[in-house]
Amino acid sequence: MKISSLNGIKMNVVKTAGTGVVNSDTIFEFQETENIVTAAYSGGLIARGFLAGIRQGERLSFTFCQLQTDGQMDNGLSHCVLSLDSDGLMILTESFEWKSRDGSPGENIFRQIEAPSSQYSQKNFLG
Image 1 (cartoon, rainbow, N blue to C red):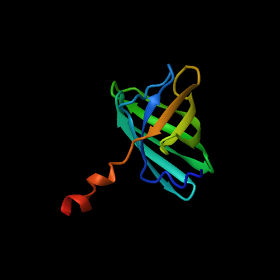
Image 2: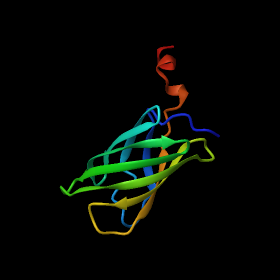
Image 3: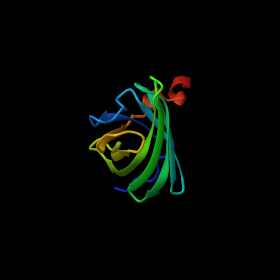
Image 4: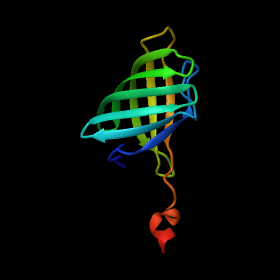
């Protein structure tokens, strides 16, 4: 199944590498215009982070920079593949490489945070 757009999608990390800093409390908010994808993220050990890159089909390449809650600043590169899980939610599998610190490359897996059920939509609350 083709994944049309990451625009407005929120994800968190469901699996992180030992060399990674993000965790399940880190929320990524994606924007996509044509093949340009950006995201802002924060939570857990991350005070604020940003990524920017390009999308070619189901593959993405990013550069990222982040400020941790302890004041450490980091950056690096990542290559990702998009897929869908059995519930139809987006999965992003990221292979990353630090540029600001020593450490082996790692892999993180992100999962789309489910949108609220339609039963809780404003229309239903208003009757």
